[in-house]
Image (cartoon, rainbow, N blue to C red):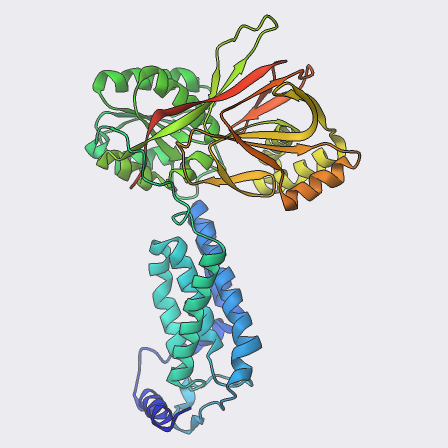
Length: 485
């Protein structure tokens, strides 16, 4: 280290050591010890995940991922690159000193790196949670100088390294905002200050139990002039949405729905029929359509409604085809259609989720389906295929393996068709597809036929019997849906 910088470093260290900090003495040493081995941040992450809903869980996971990267770099590269001795403790009051002094080299500060990496990682995903965590991270970083175990430059280097780790993780795993839907094509939708003219139906049976109050109460708080109705297990969701859409059409307003993807799909059909814009509020387990609209909370949906910002989104159709070639009434989907093993996985997951929770139920269902199911024989655009599963996504998806994950454009006019073929080594093929991906094509339409009786299909997470023949196609820019810009 250069002499001038070293002198400045030691002078600043002495100033901190010799100054009295009465309010800090009972707090900072304990905080510094609590951050050993990332224990403090693990506890904070658990708290954010517990009370922050889906955005909080993502923020907590990103924070811990950033911390892990920063800690790995500090311990494998940083500590060995600059073998700097720890400060001499003579000038540090005994009451401030840690009971167990660290034995590693001083530069850079691992505690500071971990603190800033965690806080920056959380802030990248959720600025509000980041603002909550930042003072705690700063306090931990400062405590390392305060307790005499690091020079200021050690802490500054650690903080810089932690911030870099958070940015590196962001580059590897983009945030929801990084993957957000482009703001075009924009659509005309009325601005509804306070929610005036908005008629919302809250599906109380969608998704996991709320952690922070009832969604209907939150909607009434942020949109006090909206009409909010709650749909319980004893109510007819279709009937309530139809009534709300009629009222919205008469008032020149909009239809709103709080629920999962199945509820949103039903609301979209009714909104199209009554020619009213749709407000989507995420209330399900996964909320794929809401996430692709960059709507992660009731507040996001409310902000878009009050501002009147909306886009035109494609909808996809499934049209059963009778034996004589005539088409029946189509049904719509907003995310994905699938046939093969995936509908069976959904069916078992829904059956078990109330007993063990959604994620464990999904794992158990996947194991059961992999062990018991067989490939499906189906005609695809006139050619016979044996497939494990076939997806048709409403728009081009980014993906992990064969499963669609996120869309950047909800109005691209394409069906994202993904097929996992059957083979003599079918289960091995399915496992390989989960890692390497599946056969993919962007099409305008796909026709399926020769489907055996008893086969099921899934649309937006809802399972139903499949007709013997069907056509999947698109209606471009059909749905006007609010989205925060």
